[in-house]
Image (cartoon, rainbow, N blue to C red; front, side, top):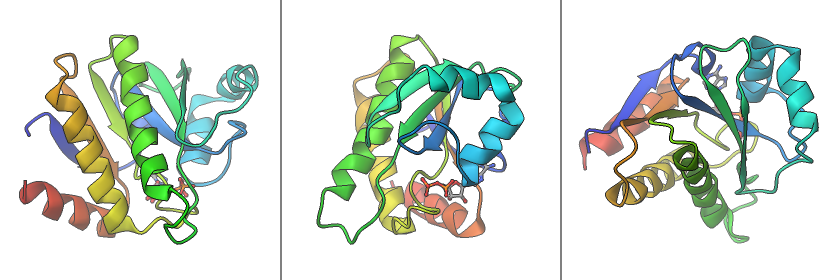
Length: 169
Ligand code: ADP
């Protein structure tokens, strides 16, 4: 699937139509990639996020990107991993799918995802990658708007997992 790519680095530096933020339900900023995005985008991002009234797990909302080189930020909320018995897999798939749907609605052609839920939210990395790749691949089967969907990996462990799984497709 040549529209799916892996890039290792800081998602806030990507010149792309949309970057996805692994936000929390408040949409008022946090640590990890969320903190990095808010720091790089500047205070206007938080101002816009305040108008959104939060976001449920698995849902997605879109804002401008302000000082970021990207055009838009799509904020989605991944699940906290509690052991996998309360729908975490489906919620993670929903986070990816709803972000893609929103990007599609806006006519966006390039989008980058961080490894949602695999930081503070403790989702097992390999399982998260399997779900992310399957959800994106299934979405792209019926889509002809996206040019590329990029998995932005930050740590070496996720890079190795994504390279291995994508090579096996
Ligand atoms: P969550 O709360 O959804 O687990 P985190 O931000 O804690 O979100 O982690 C999600 C992923 O984002 C982790 O794999 C982490 O390594 C990665 N990450 C952290 N900072 C950045 C960044 N600047 N660019 C891209 N990915 C990042």
